[in-house]
Length: 360
Image (cartoon, rainbow, N blue to C red; front, side, top):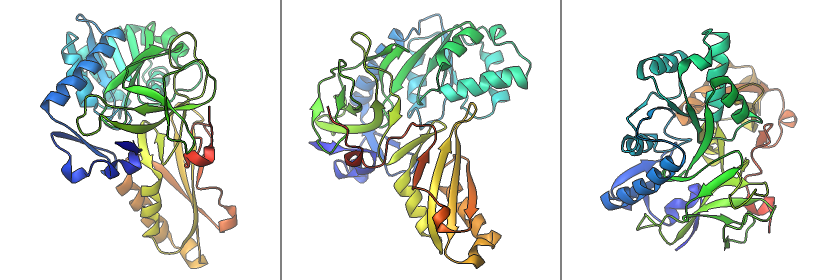
């Protein structure tokens, strides 16, 4: 059927023709649908990985996820409901709210993004003066984000819990892999593909050490079963044994920031509607537990640089585009603005896969 990424999915299936339960991306330009029988098939895949990830019939599970970095968080909850004693979702925002939810639900399993879990841990110590061991969490499942070094080790030690991973695809939100720091056990629908312009799917050969992109071939979707969908997640390490290594990078038009995907082309389009922008750059870093994003902008005229209304328009445009908190920095001249994307975390390899040009 063809190849597509999140930004080109509509070339394979028009959003207005998608059927069944529709999932929309953050900027509503990624639309996929699943009919009732397809939902059942996708749910079976997710439940298999949940069981393999260690969720059992006696577990009480709390999801602290948004519906983007781990799309279909509601679908995860629905699948877990068929496997565990109880499941609830409280969203990722508000760490005091999360603590109250834990005290109320008394979960044995906590499902979070890695930065969300580390930030929660930090606040338990600094703000809430709560010993993580007192919460009774036996297992932490990380999903939807790239982790900082030693995240799993620190969480395991502080909570006294087993720490594992669940990987959900960015189109449907189906869980397609589970594992730990040693790597992921994947579903057959997930294969490795080249990063360069050569759109040739490779078998899931984990013996090589060249970076490769995770590519989705969703057998449960009638409309897209013969398609190859680039996920933007990149494996950059050689495997240990027969597992696929944990993704350690991203590539393409979408950036992962605080568990949310941000479309660079959508950002560029939003900024084009604001008069007088001479140059801009998005800087992303992770100095502590959470990602920080700054939009650096230079205007073409000094009168705009000095006018607070223009910086206000920028903030309004960003709030309309994404729930991610992005700080605005006005620079005096365009020559003080760097490349369009500056990822100080080292996560994003580049916007153009062909320019990245990594081949096997």
